[in-house]
Length: 195
Image (tube, rainbow, N blue to C red; front, side, top):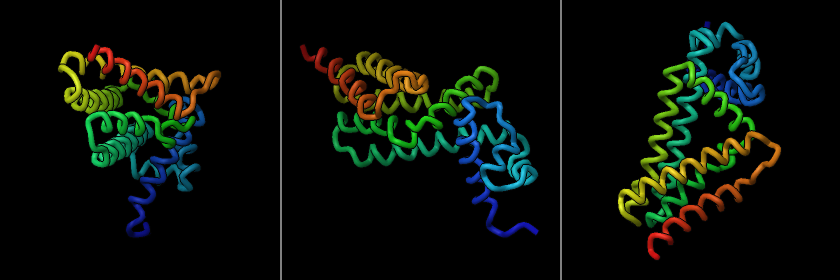
């Protein structure tokens, strides 16, 4: 007989384990057994909760995007000015749990999977739209809408690009350096509009 109240705990453990195992492998070619073992549950229980590996992977993407969203919302609430809010979005994008090697590897695997899975692609499009929206909304307070959209595209491309460079591990860039590069891009572009 299953223990009452354990389902949310085990589901979370499986989602967290999926992110770690995918990150360790650097691809989605992991098995439900590997994920279940990492989570400390049986493969049968993993299948019971999620039905298939694909559903567990989709839930993993959804949960991690929700965590990122929650972190951004909290950081935006704490920031005072539009420029501070831009810095908050950048900081959250490179915070330790997002910039960990296994997390970066998992995200890259999810991007690769989005070429085949419409549902995974949909979640990643939502992430890109949220990032763009958060950047544009705060840039509009500092410049014209057209400039805001252009600068936001560049900043989002830098964030995603720095993730890719970090995944190469041949020339790793620190969290602080990633934040500084992205901040410098924003400052340079905003200052150029004043000139």
